Amino acid sequence: MAKKLLIATRNYGKVRELARMLDNLPFNVVGLDDLEIDFEVEETGSTFEENAVLKARAYGEASGELTLADDSGLVVDALNGEPGVLSARYGGEGLSDEDRVQLVLKNMEGTSGWKRKARFVAVLALVGNDVPNGLVTTEGVVEGAIMHEPIGQNGFGYDPIFWMVEHTKTTAQMTAQEKDQVSHRANALKAMMSTLESLA
Image 1 (spheres, one colour):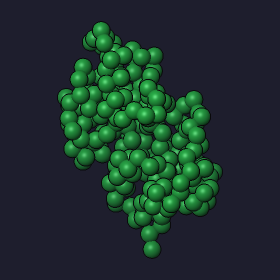
Image 2: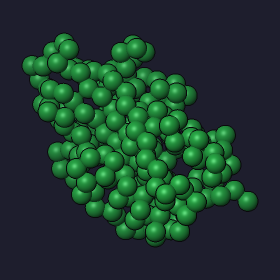
Image 3: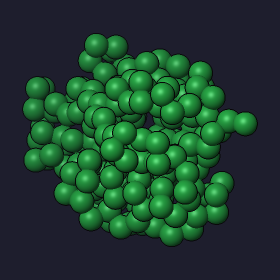
């Protein structure tokens, strides 16, 4: 029977993305709702790594399963690194992805050219009884720029305004298969893959 791997998020965009990328490993990938884990971990860390570790440890302890947590976000130079670790809560709790995209665009009005540089950052934290030292973390980064308006229908979050310079399209214009090869989360997962393979 396949070993369970808990993806410690309620964001099913992330669960689906990671499950696709782990498709060749014999894990039964589940999300928090699948295990009826209903508490939230307060993301009090000041870095992506601190928040990923907080989530991995709390949900790993609650579930008793091998647990992979992600903390990721958009870092915009012209906004002094915002939205950063607050990417999912940028502008307040009640906003939709579209609202947050519009807020970034509004806050960048009058900013042009190379000053629109940005990056997506993802940190993965893996915890479990068989994980080396009980914890492994990896980071993935993708450099790009912020568009002046949203383009594309795929993905989630800030994908419609993140221009992948090397690929001449936004991440929201990429197919799932394209994004799985080049995204910040994909890069973090590639770095984690040898550990996951040893645990499968």
